[in-house]
Length: 126
Image 1 (spheres, rainbow, N blue to C red):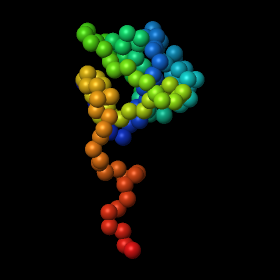
Image 2: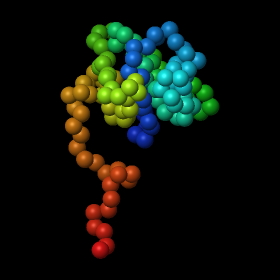
Image 3: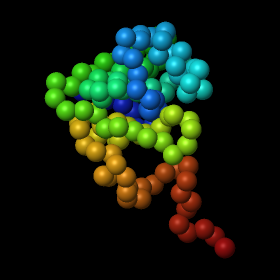
């Protein structure tokens, strides 16, 4: 099982990917089409056309990691974006759900949780 820190950024490349691509090909896609730096410590997910294979590209500890997942049965969820970016951002919980076969579209409504970035203190002095 792949464990990911909760604060890592995870980006899904929405278009179908040729699974013959390796480190150089996938990092080229990240640079050219996703317009991101593949060495920024984020995870980049690529899924093939049949949606039964996934590759995850990650740069950590001075080098690239490439994870490959092949499903013996079933498929990964199909992603779509509302804009032309071709990229979707998910969090580590959603990645765990995706890898476990749980549909993300059926569980998009999330309960509120504390986040230091977006929440303000409840009791502010007036």
